[in-house]
Image (cartoon, rainbow, N blue to C red; front, side):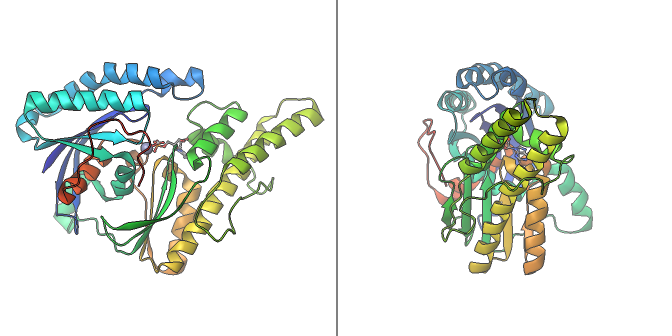
Length: 356
Ligand code: KG4
Ligand code: ZN
């Protein structure tokens, strides 16, 4: 099944072409092309994503991105079997632009339309394989990505922090989620406190490399709580007070070294608590695999931390290739394929609060 997928839930306009096969037991998602047009530069002056600006940019960018794909593959219309689009979660005006665009395309090209859940997209991003890699590997051995179940999956993005126990591609139980800020959101907010641009996650990570992660002992709320829920607003507030007190005491702005120490200590506090609770879940549920995904999965500390946990338990660890951590349409094709196999349809309306 060749799927053309569209993603416009936040600040990335993305269209991808993916060949999906294998059914839900052994799915294969071969990414032929994944084009992402980022709006970050438009939102930087506002320190975060402005929904109506995002909508305006998606309307402008969607035809351009599609044209690029049509130029890349002249037989696109013939080859596509279905069109997939993100229906939620995300920013409502942004979601609608993708849905309207997809509906129009589906009518003009006479192709079925499949609604997809953005979070299922992040969850399945670990199964995506770029086509070049597939071709190279085909010469040596089977290209299939084989992930063993049961698995514990940590999905961490700008809007969500969710821990799942997965029995299969279609059967999972939510163990916990954040009770307040998402992990990525905390990174973005702390970055703003340190006068770093949006999006804050990569900026904090870059600055943290020059700091001492043991310099400040920020709290790790809910680390030892019985549940698998998370909370990040306390760490964020602790950073706010730390910065305020430091500036008051020294009557000076923070220097680069102090900022780097804050970034490193904050990064350690957040990623440690994420890894700690994921490790506990992996042990309790006898997981054979730990899966990490979502924008925060780009964080090297978190990846290393979870890789170490998995090694110590003698199980596998998997996180997506760099380009599939943050928002992209290839993952939406994967989510749509699994949905279509399940014969469970989403309504073709923007559902900003959809979850896993
Ligand atoms: O999944 P994503 O692209 O969008 C949402 O669905 O929300 O995630 C974006 C989030 C942002 O909060 C961004 O700051 C965070 O992912 N992020 C990171 C890193 N790269 C992106 N957080 C920590 N470390 C990173 N290296
Ligand atoms: Zn996302």
